[in-house]
Image (cartoon, rainbow, N blue to C red; front, side, top):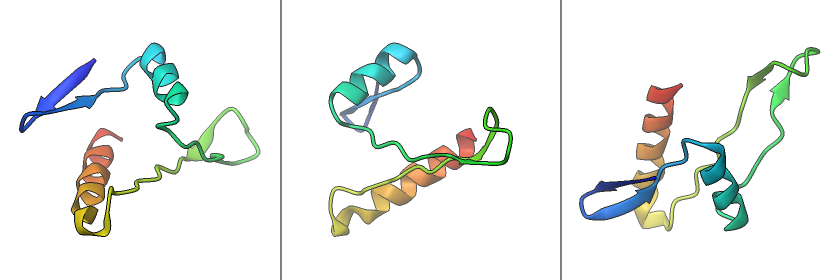
Length: 71
């Protein structure tokens, strides 16, 4: 699925198939979740937001705000 904002198409990862596709494209970097003793219930997760360049750092900030709204 894609979403278009300001004539830019973005991939929306909202199902396992898209997640697998993104992983195949090396577009995602996973970090080990932080857990308590109950390993089936992680308490935190890291989203590694890398902007395309220093001049576009505002994009990482915008992504962080969108993630915060979602979670």
